[in-house]
Image 1 (tube, rainbow, N blue to C red):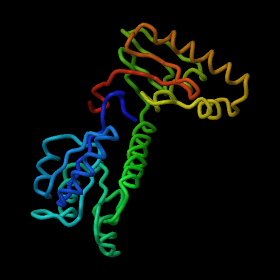
Image 2: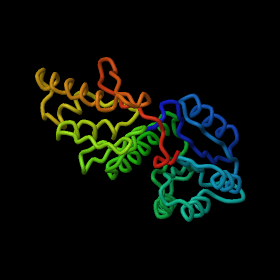
Image 3: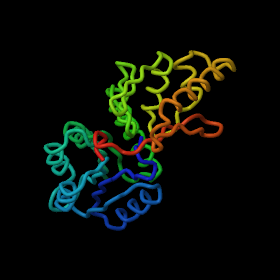
Length: 240
């Protein structure tokens, strides 16, 4: 989902129990997330206004500004950022209120940190997948790739793609800087992952590499035993 392999997803964590908050923050940082901890809703609101976050995790019961109020104010600024609520309560009214405000998930304490991580990752994958599926134009380094037109543009020079090249490059773009599994590509484009189709896909990968060879920052690498990875530098349209 990340456009830069070294880039960490930014998480805003608001939890007034400092011990729990620090434990969660350290756990997320150990899992390669950039997690900021705030101990009340006011501090959380200021942090959100000062920095761009990929996902928010809010305790419901916090001093100065509770999680629901904080979420409402953040939704007025950004309607798309995912929000997960943490609560010690298990009242249906609280759950309904959280989802009414626009929560993406709701976890009741006590919970395992692994469960929180799994839920976060599922939401981030869904958000990334939705964004990618709606896109028809990608900036691949110095190349502009247009799915609908089936072409690559670089320095005003257009290169038309065949249908198979276009389908394969589209899949690679939708897994940019992540692994595109061989089986997924084969079953999506060739409908079968037999030996002959696998050899055919390898040929098309070679063709795409030649089409993209003029920009050294763009690369289609082999991931041994798994598939391929399209590596591209971040671009302004990706919000970086």
